[in-house]
Length: 498
Image (cartoon, rainbow, N blue to C red):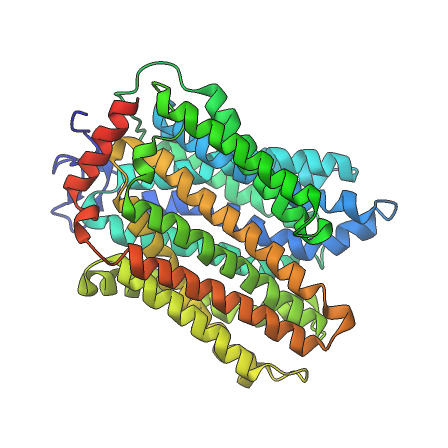
């Protein structure tokens, strides 16, 4: 594979300028590029959790709708979003990352508008599918644009800021949602409109276009469909597992179908001239480690956010607004730790992998602290706030470090594909964590609520600890796998498969 012009941009185009400002590809300021791309990921991350608080209000407006039908307002978004991520990243590499990013922004914004206008649940579910497809297009394109547009010397801080804003959006979902549902549940979707319109207007002006110019031949459409089916079936099975039962024929059959589709996709990818996933990426120790650790981490993170909401509203009987405000201090810790402290620690400790281990252990420690303090009588300042603040610090350390480790092993020509795979890990992990938490909390009606939530905290702490263990084994040893030479080897491997 020939050297990509994105690997080392000329000094006049990217890097440090004499005016003291970092410049990205095409001379655009790095701060402006990160700000526009972060707007999109904030919007998408916010939507993953904001709708949870609107769910009961939607049910009240459509009283004749069954709970099973209403659940697809959440499930449809989750499944479609997860299924689109990796094919979207591959298409972004081929046809242009900014083009896919802009199209995803438009689809997400239009879908949000239609969600707010929906006259019934079927129309709302359809609009959610459009919204999810848009989110699945723009998120991997957003990260790949950041990697391609920002010079290497500014990339660590840019990834920290981008991932911090994404984590902030997810964690602020209950805060924003709890406030908006007091006006009308439709504002949960309409809040995306001004952000989306601003991001669409700025994308063409601020974000430079980039793509893989060495791609030849038609993409593997069948492979993309098989991958989307595999991820969609896996997400569907995880969403329905608490209702079906983890040992039920329906769940095991869905899981088997997902494995069959995934296996067929791998077989095609080994032989196709332009596969949807270059298997060379997955042979990287660092990339695979970041992928597995991210699944475990986001399973814990998704369960952690939902667990806090359920405990505050169900045990302490907080209102939606009060619960959102109580969760708020934790997310405020994310941005400084992700954008300032994590990059400095990575430089001092020899790489983001070690920071990821520390962050995961901090998060696990926060859950242990909450476990030791939890009680039925409300005592927010002394019993929950310390764990929230510690957890927010852990999120700020972990997420950019896992992302930085994974993207360091991706060659420039495959930024979109790699971004899609890492974001798929985030989505699958979140679905897995929420499904596991729902299974634990299903015992609430028949047992002591504090004991039940202690069991949930054990699950969350174990997932955080598991993510830290994977990071310690796969992301901290053999720095050579993250070197430019390793990236060139990955690029040549990917190039041979294409």
